[in-house]
Amino acid sequence: MKATLVLLPGDGIGPEIMAAAGQVLNRLGELCHHEFSMHSYLIGGSAIDAAGTALPHETLVACQQADAILLAAVGGPKWDDPTAQVRPEQGLLGLRKELGLFANLRPVNLHPDLQDASPLRSDRLAGVDLLVVRELTGGIYFGEPRERRLSDGLIEAVDSMVYNQAEVERIAHTAFQLAQDRRHKVSSIDKANVLESSRLWRETVTQVGKSYPEIELEHLLIDATAMYLVTQPARFDVLLTGNLFGDILSDEASVLSGSMGNLPSTSLGEGTNKHGFPRGLYEPIHGSAPDIAGTGTANPIGTILSTAMLLRHSLGLSLEAEQVENAVTETISAGHRTVDLTRHGEPCLNTNEMTAQIVSRLKRP
Image 1: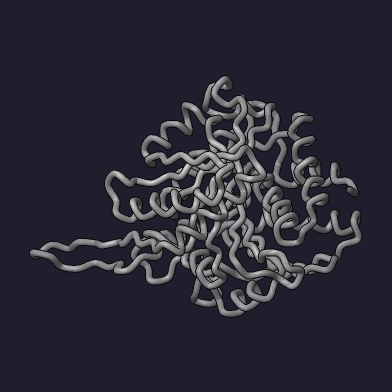
Image 2: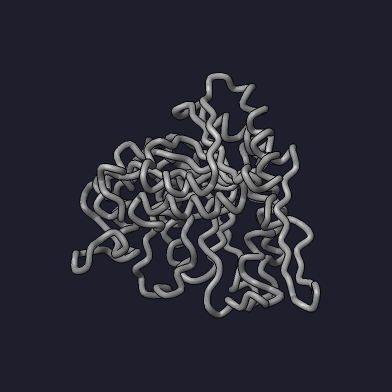
């Protein structure tokens, strides 16, 4: 296969973990005779410094023409002023919006050898295998009006949580279809006891669920779900939720695996690439970790597993994706850890060493 991939290293540890993904793709290309044409572009803080915008036109055009996009991370203290007109996260939000990437998928699987790395007791982690399906282009992050205004002599700020029926139907179908290949359960998360947008969400999801009679549907409030994620995480299969709640819950769920550094994600839309597969945006769920940037201690696993998701969803290379996932599993089983997965004083590998261990275990399907 020949595929054109856009790499967006971004900021902080981004260039370090993106290099790990590049090594994996290069090795797979050699083993399986694929030609991955990889091109790097600016986004986030680095783009602001170079071009004055978080999403340069050149970057957007390249992403629109690529078969898939791999993003590392954006942001850092240099650009942290929330009142700034141009901020790194605008690059990511803009890319999602421009490409119509409405569905964010965040799987959470726990390697049995990493149970001690999680802050939860091991008995609560048995059987954890869940998928957060987050609506990505609507809700409070994009709703209007969004403004500050003067009211009775006081400054007030307004953000609007807006969803329409079609947006909810689209993400709900995605969740139910994914549940068909899993354990046939969807937990829809909202705040329907308070928010009108959540009441529409619940009504619409219920209606969509009637088209999937083989799938069990439950409705849960966001606050109860936050509690269940740390007390009964194994009860969940597919969690379906909106933009804001999904952002929070997926980060909470990440600690189940022992480290945010372990977990991948993909954002998919309705368009397809030249191979007929979704043109997705793939990224680890962690941030740019500026406090460790340049130290060589970043965990590359989340980025490498995001690469596996790219192979599967955007290129149709499921066997190659399994090889990447197996290589990660075997590396962990062999006892190799980055510092975020160890206790104080325990031996650990740096980013390059961990990547080398994983690459050495790649095989031809």
